[in-house]
Image 1 (cartoon, rainbow, N blue to C red):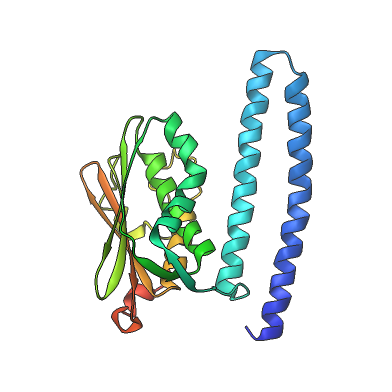
Image 2: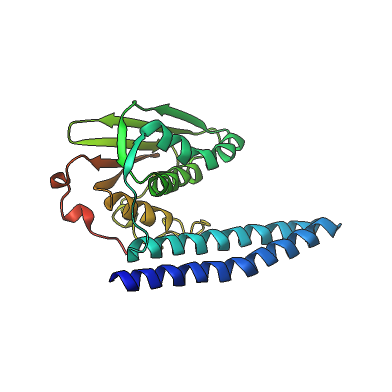
Length: 236
C-alpha cells in the first residue's frame, strides 16, 4: 500500500465502522425497550439472549476492523516506554468483574521493568490472551500472570488451570477463526490478533500445555536480531 491507498483504506474502514454501528445501536435500543416492557419470563429470557448476540456481533465487527487497519498499515504503532504494571492493569481492567463473579483467583507476579510498546495495541493483545484464560478456567480456578526480564527479552506469561489444549490443536492455536472447541461461543480471532500485534513489535508468542495447565508466553525482544524469520510468519 502507498500513502494514498492507506489513507483511502483508513477512511473507508472508518465509514464502514460508522455505518455498521448505527443499525447495531438501533437494535440495542429496540431490544432494551422491549425487554423493559415485557412481563413474560420466557420472552424476557429470549430478549436477554438476543442482546448477548448483538454484543457478539458488535465485538466481531470492531475486532475485524481493527485487524484490517493493522494489517493494511493504515494504523501505525506508536512506540513509547511504559511500565509492565500499567500494561497488565489495563489488560485486566475489563475482565476483573467477570473474574470475580466466576470466583477466579488472579495471581500477579510482575517486576518493575519498562517496555517499549504501543500501549493500546499491546493491551488489546494481552487482554485477548487473558480473556482466553478466563473462558477456559472453571469457577474457582486460578490465572497467574508473571514477568521475567533478561538481557535479550522481556517475558510475560499467562498460566491457567483450565481444560488444557490438545496436541492436535496446538499447531493451529493462533490461526484465524480456528476454534479448539466447536461448542464454544468463541469466534476464533482473538489469539490471531494477539499474535499479529506481538510479532509487529519484535516479539513472539508461544503456548505450552501440560494436563489441565496452559501457559501463553509473550517474549518482547530488545534487539531484532533475536527474532527469527519463522517466528514472524503470519497465521491466516
